Image 1: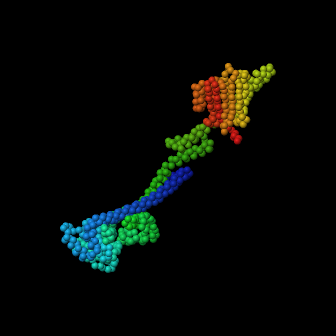
Image 2: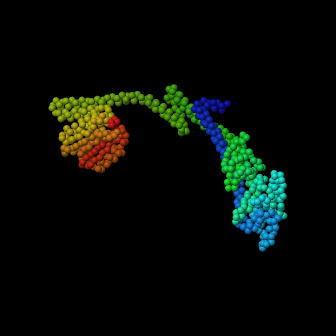
Image 3: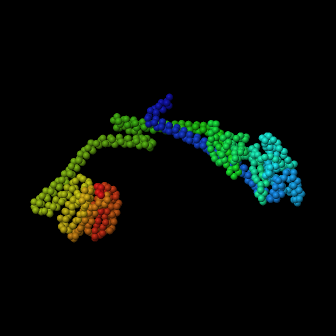
Length: 606
């Protein structure tokens, strides 16, 4: 009951319940999806493992028969090396009946100086008696009527013959040699057998004429294949079948039973899944083109997928891990739920007007702690702002008053200069009047609150400033203006050019000569405005020039004599970006060129 109340209180917390439900659903979906993926993957792994085991089993059976075939091929090579055996014994035996051949062999033995006979018996015994898998070896003439048999296992051969005779339904006479290793002369038509024997045949030709003398057939017992498959029964759950290229059935590891889906099977190496009688089966085939054998692995899917115990363990593990994950999440989130409740309570208190509430500090350093600290700091700041609001209002009014007074003083100075100018005109001092007028215009321009002005206004301001200095230095300063009409309306920062002219008059102007030239040129280059101020004054020493250029590039304040350059450069870059500003070049004693680059406000007309 107590535990249920705790859980009920926890679930009333919306954030807690949403996170818990979302996390639980996510965990369950993830775990069961993982279970499904692992189960399918495990099933595929088992199927692939069975396929690999089937392929390996078929390859071993193929290797087994390949060894037998290579042995027969080796015997044939050895036979062709013994030409005297072919000409003097085998050829005669295949062309005569058994009695004639026996008399012929006795005559040859009596004529031979060696005590070791060289005939069919010795040849067969030498090459076929050591292989326990051989049931018999048959030598058959190319012309019907003569056959010889070398029997290696009487029990298996007799059993084979009995089953064969039961199939044929007729009994034929067989001549038996009295020795343990004997030849049998039989006369029957050739017939492929499937009674526990696999036949490997080779033609025997006359080495000189290449005329076919007969066929050599070796009958291998299938017990060797059966033992090989039995040893791999723990890895391979299917059955193995062997067919010939023409579809004849040679061997089955399932008591000679041929599954219906294997009838009319194609002679090719492949792997496929079929459905028969509502069940799935896997067929793995391995085709031996050289020998004409088709090795088939046949596996019911039900036998492969007998892994229910593993699936049960996987399901149990998934459920157990999901429960553990959800329980750990629940208990881990309880502390977060408590802290969220404290924050929510504090917010309600503030909404009700209690600005003295504070969220207790937590030892954990996480986002909730950061929210709590920020909330407490916000309340402290709010209380402080409430206390200081009156002081701020008073200070703001004082600042407004001083601002009004600061506006009155320049106007007073401008009006005073205008009164002095009128008095100079009344007294007949026109130069003094002009100077006072120009100075008044400069003050009036400076009183303007605009930050951006037209180039025409800035040029007019420069002209007023230069006009004052031309009155002071009569006939010593000559100014040339090259300003196209389409550039006069472009925008420029206020007080951009006057500090540069002032810098020239202070540092570059030569008072001792009357050929001081100053060029002010404005031109538009694509989407930029370039203003060039060029003079023929004193120039700048190379070391000082490098220092000025470096500090302009770095954006720092230049030396005391070049404050105007630095100020204008920084203002342009702050307004328009790092791609704009001032560049300066100079030749000491010859000239100084200042280039101002700003963006064009209006599009260029084509």
